[in-house]
Image 1 (cartoon, rainbow, N blue to C red):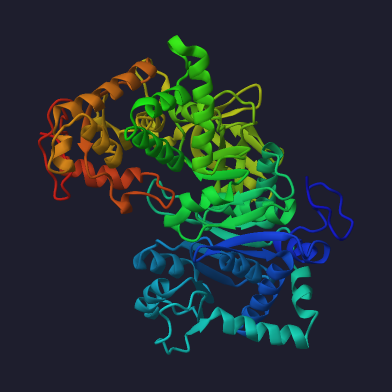
Image 2 (tube, rainbow, N blue to C red):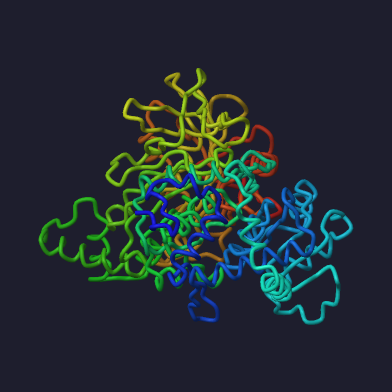
Amino acid sequence: MILKRGRGLAATYPTAIDTLPKLLVDLHLSHPARLALRKKRVGYWHQYSWQDCYEHVRDCSLGLRELGLERGDAVCIIGDNDPEWLWSELAVQSAGAMVAGIGAEASTQQIRQHLRALRPKIVIARDQEQIDKLLAIREDLSTVRQVIYWDSKGMGSYDDPWLQFIGVLKEAGRRVADSQPERFETGVAEGRAGDTAIICLTAGTEGKQKGVSITYDALLGAYDNWSARAGVQIGDELFSFGPLDTVVEQSIMIPAALLHGAVINFPEQPGSVFADLVEVRPHFVVFPSVWWEYVHKELFAASLEVTGIKAWCYRQAVAAHPGGAFQILGGLAGAATRGLIRNKLGFGRLKSGFSTGSRLGPVVSAYFERLGVRVRNLYSLTEAGGTVSCQDIGDPEYSSAGKVGNRTKVMIAGDGEIVVQTSGAADGGVVYTGDIGALGPDGKLSVWGRRCEMIEAENGEPCSLGMVESDLRGSPFISDALVFEQAQQGNYSALIALERKTIARWAGKRRIGYANMIDLADREEVLTLVKEHIETVNAAVTNRLTVKDFILLPLGFDRDELTATGKLIRTVVMDRRLNKAGDGAKPSRQRLSFVGEDGNRGVD
């Protein structure tokens, strides 16, 4: 259900109000007191109405215009999920400018690279950490006239006219609003559906990221593709966890609040996500597939710490067919335990969870479904403005990416590439995705993997290395995996990163002594454990490919080998890891002897 608008709009996709700032102004007029969002600060949840949001956006926007921001300019926001990011973004858009986001975890070098490409007039950053990075590369930022920050902690000693606290900016904007009350909404009214709203960076799983301009039309169309399947209602609670610089968060969270009256909840900090999630108890969550895999491993690791009746109850909760000799008792215990686990995760009233990014393996999907948490796949594309397809609530196929949205058309090229056509998208509305897949007669899209991941399997059929990798990650003992061909000989091996917490608890329960993770990875019991899981995956992917060997990485992959959403950057890993192991190396299931400079085990 879409909120009834203050200007008599029909409860359908809005055509009269066609930009995000226009939606904000309309909410300010029609539902000023309605709760819009929450932010946890120092253990307390602060609440903001649409009237509050309007005033923050108006004052910030007019303040930016006083600094010289003009229609068509670019502004870069650097930080993590926070109301100030949302207000700043809408403020920039209200002035007719476009927003480009960069995550708080970006390095100084990454910020330099992105800002030199974007050439923003103004940068809005979170705190001292980002300010220090910007000051270090100031000489390379010739287009940046002003840097605004919203968290003043640690900034008291900084005396530089290039820097300005956002409170000072808003105060200047408030004075303009008092003297020229029509100026803000007049500027908002000039916006059009075809204007660029945001510039989003692609994931960069194949190397270098690129910026994509996304119009309001594309953004709201992608949201319509998702909301038609999700069934968001007025007052539903959302949890903003995914990076705000990604198209998934941009095309779901912000439109859901502005169009459907959903409430956005921002966690206190990345480290408090689990605790904050429990307090919010959201109705919908949209998380990267790596997060669902992580929770699966965390729950399994926790189960290794319990014994007796608690361990038995957990087994009943996650068993495909619980009960056994005590079928009725097992069923009751399993149901009660599933409820406790859902509440512990903050999923007590969850309607649906959504998985984005790389494919979520069937083992993990089935695990959550047995807990009573339906994780639905959605296929999102930066160049298309967001969601392309999304699973219906009753779709039983774990591997499906769901039905294509009403605002999008999908075609399959002769070589299997997925081609997306949507209004307002980059490249004239037609996007050649680089993903390989199939479109069923029922309208469901299957995404097999990136073109660079596709190989010809033993039966001559195309096969995705990425799908095999997601099946390998289905083990609670494996945090990540990368499958590669050995010396172009048709033999496939895998780089396996151990999940430290799970493997350590598993070893402790079996009283396996070890000095450190490198030592533990050399234990025969661990090698056998990994080998057995690989054999299980091989059996499940019969007639596709067989992983014959593996290289164990007890210390895991490095941060710069992953994208912001936790996906492996294949080209970087292949270059760094396999070069260390030696060209044409032949790994062994039984003994791993090579030790790199980072301590990871390689091969003879």
